[in-house]
Image (cartoon, rainbow, N blue to C red; front, side, top):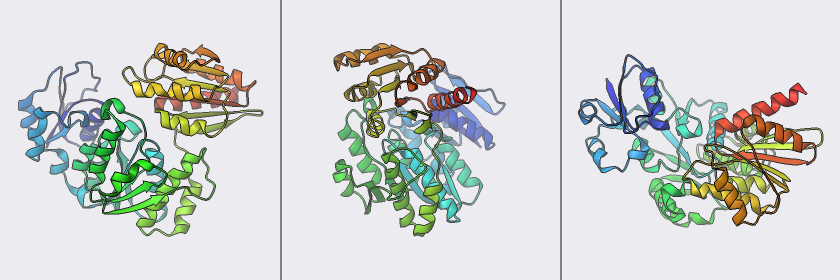
Length: 407
């Protein structure tokens, strides 16, 4: 069987790798001619253009979520040639979708741990940008073995794509916040997309999110969560909310409360998410905070005298608001390092607009960040390192621990 993968962003590249690993022949294409893919005898690739004859002659098509609404590709959807319509084993499995602005991956993995402790065989995956292997991997793996539950993390930018690719029985919405607004155009448009996504489904919602009004009208059944009333091995009030969302989903599946509480109390943080590194006289909090609401959630946890923040990609204007949020807390020091892109000048302009009066430092790389954090943790009790990019946060955390151990 030959599958065409159209569009080679993060999701597309993951799809190619999954298909090859599962024994399929693949035709892949992208209008960008600067895509890195390893050569394989079963891979035929065109860069700089799409060969529509090759796409049409394939047995199935994987369409990149970013191309989902492009008119030129609608034929493959109407002809039911999409991979999710050709390989369909996953559609008969009870499927939970976890979406929202922040906390998706943590909540997904909390649910996975509860399901495992309850003796259920769960397949967990989804959003390649969240650290999973992508949606194609879920579809292919579901066809290769027997599972009781499918657990899919759904990026807020792939709602329409996932609504077509999966049959969701239960949807968990962690929260609605300000991110990817260059894609959604506005928070209101994001809410409309989410309303369409949850229509007719059993849905779990955050009771504190006031913007959920119009969503409730669309659901077949609505459940709410607030916060878990017991301690976890995790930093932050926001993780008590993630745990409550996971617990509510498990309760709907009639998993006993004892199993739910045991799984959540045993749950440890995920790589790249909020971690506390305790030093003799201070602490360094490191965490992926790639939008303003995620940043605000961490900064609400205490007074950070030193804040070290990585910059967003060029064009991600809404994510530059992170620096407005940081400025509001009036730390003594803000240090900026190149995160997903070097947009340090843009970040500094935001701080000027906000009339931030503390010291501002430029850092070059991860080594600079680690040295700076350790130096100022000797003077100040609370240091925060955040910003865009899970891999960057993982590397910073690892290098910090190594530097501390070497002392």
